[in-house]
Every structure is written in structure tokens, then in C-alpha cells.
Image (cartoon, rainbow, N blue to C red):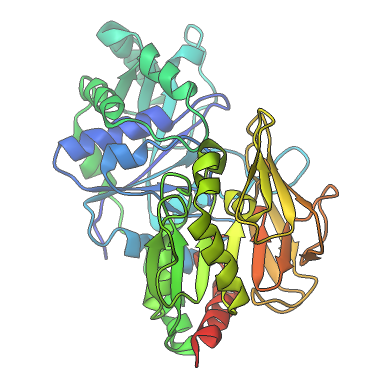
Amino acid sequence: MSRLPRLALGTVQPEADSRFVTWALLNALTRGGYQAQHFHSRCSFGGVDGALAAAGLESHHLDSWLMRPELCRELFQRACRDCDVAVVEGSYAPAATETGQATGGRLDPLCQWLGLVRIAVLDVSQLSGCRLPPRPTVDALVLDRVKGEEGFFSWQTVVESLWRIPVVGGLDELPEERAAVAAMQPGGRVLPETCDRLGQSLERYTRLEPIIERGQGREQPEFCGRPLDELCRTFGSCVATVAIAYDDVFRCHFPDVHDVLELLGARVVDFSPLADESLPPGVDLVFLGCGRPDLFAERLADNHCMRAALQQHVRAGGRIYAEGAGAAYLCQSLETPCGTRVGMAGVLPATARLSSTFVPLEPVELTLEAASWLGAANTSLRGYRNRNWQITPLGKLTHLTPLLDGCGELFAHQRVIASCVHLNFAAQLHVLHSLVGAASLAATP
């Protein structure tokens, strides 16, 4: 049984924001000598990232909608193997919308599967007098947006008296820091000094030791099977080399996919479409995740060597999987929100356009209409649809899934598969099996 402190940190108010308390706690833990691993409670991108600056590690993703409990536990354990404490961020929200549609991954099932201690973030600026929202089923509370020590102790007295739930910490209003984050574009990264100020504020009202002890109070449930070990036994060793784009443009990725690929025996290497002149040698499969190519469009367009390398990779029989911004980069051209059109890699006969306003990603379930190296026909896929990118075909693209709202979500061209849906392959091992199998086949002489 593991005694790793495991904390679930989430909001109980629809308009509240848990990010600042989460980043403050991660920073305070780091300053206190703890190595903390941060998790999102759903496999989607699009927001501003502060966890990396606060804790020094990239966030991992869990998702009760995508993952079975045993896979979720195994991915959680692997990500935490060298850490002192785990923090899973989300929202204590209803299971479905008013229309009955799924809302994607939720925090509550993860608390049950992983034995997490439930800590709720309560935004006191949204409270009026002694009127509180319905009492949440949580173990402890952190008060957000308190007005100094007087405000913290006043609200602590009220909340603990009415709810009988202990208040273990608080965070000041910090208007300048919150305004700076609000002004950041999706995909941006919070500065370390901002996280330092958040952590220092949290430390005024918070003692870490009781939180750590509380987080150790529950044992992690027993494993009921190890899906990754089973996948390795079923598939065998992978001989492919997988190149994953990672630089200032392409920041959005799932670290667990890297780990599982290496577990299967694949050689995983990074490359930069922004700075490198060629792909790493011996690459069989190229991964292009999401990001912000619109912010670096001219530099990407000027990297003629990388554009030629990607085109030659496909002509030579190599495969490319791209989603969101990665799919946009492979197009003939990209149109930015201000109307500027810039040439891109020219691998796909299509143009890409970025929406002027950010639309949150939404969960979708798709079925492959045609067989591909992602799977056989009728294979089910779950992911998060990114409607911020619109891909318009200029030539023949094979739609692999039904159209949604008149738009293609997953399409193929030669040995390229591009998607407007973010797929965490570590959460869908049947798809990863097909993907790595195709890459291994390409690598076989």
C-alpha cells in the first residue's frame, strides 16, 4: 500500500477558479522541499500553464471518462514514482449537463479510484454575508480571495461553524497577478516569479505539514490488473523511432504517451519545427501536438529545411500524426485571427484558420468509418474536440470519421492522419497498439 500524500483540489462554485490556489500550493510545496506532481482531471488543453513554473514538472492528465480505474491507477503511480506528493486539480461538478451529454473527465470518480483527500477551493468574494452554497462533501477547505488576515480569520470562523469542515489554508486577492494571468493568451506559461508571489501569499495562512499528513490518511486502492504490462505482453517489443514536436510552438502534449511508447520499446526523441533544420535520423512516426503556430507563423514559414524534411518524410513512406495546431502547421497555409495568411509545411492540401476567440474543448466520441493505421473500421475513439482550428480542404482528404456540424474531425492524406480532436493514446491502448504497430511495420526493413 502506498502512503504517498494524494490531494484532490477543486472548486465547488460554478464561477470559481482553482488555478491560483493550485499554483500557490505547488509553489509552497516546492519551497518547502517537497517534489510535487500535478495532474489535470481531464485530458484537454487550452488554458494557461502555471504548474510547470510552480513545481518544475510538467503536468500529467487523468480522465475518468477516457480511462478505466485500473489504467488510471497505473498511470498515476508511474507519474508519481519519484515524487513526494500528488495534486489532482479539477472541479467537484455534476456528472452531466442539463442536456444529458457527457462533460468529460470529472474529479469525483478520481477521488474514489485513487483514494484522494478532497480539498475544496472556496472563493469568498462570491459569498454574501453568511450565505454559503450547499455544503460540499469534502475533507477540508482552502479560502480564495481573502482580504488580509482579518478577512481570512473571519471567513474561517463562519465556514467552520456552519459547515463543520476544517479550513486548512487561504490565498489573498492578489489583483495584479490575477489580471496578468487573465491577459495571457491560451497556451501561455506563467512566470516563476508570479508563482512565487502566490506561494508566499498562501504561506501566510497555511501550514503544509497538516495538509501532507491529511493527504497520507488514505491508502491507495489495490491494483486490479496492470493494463500497460498486459499491452507489452500482447504487443511485444516496438522497434520504431517516434519524433515528437516540442518547442515554444508545440507545447501541448500528454507526457504519459511518451512514457508508454518507451515502455513498449520505442525510441522517443524530441525535435523543434521552429529551430531544427531536419528530422532526427531514422524517424518512422512524427507526432505534432497542439500549440500556437500563429504566434510564430513567420519563423515557421521561413524554416524551409524543416518543411522540406516533413514532405520528404511522407514521400519516403514515413507516417505523421498531427492534431489541432499540429494539423494546421501541416496545411498549405495558416490564417491568423488578424487575417494574415502565411505559408506552412505544405504536407496537407488544406488551409487552416484560427478562431479569434478561444472556445473551450468539448468531449466527443467518434467512430472510424474507414480502416486506417489508427484502427479498423468501427473503432471507437474518445477525445476533446478543438473547434478553435478550422481545416478547409483544397484537395482530396479522406474523412475517417463522420462530419460534426459540417466539419471533418479526423482525416487522412497519404500517410498522414490529422485531427481536430485531442486524443490521449495512453488512455486508449487499443488505438496505441495500432499506431505503434504501424510505426514498427514502417521501421522493419
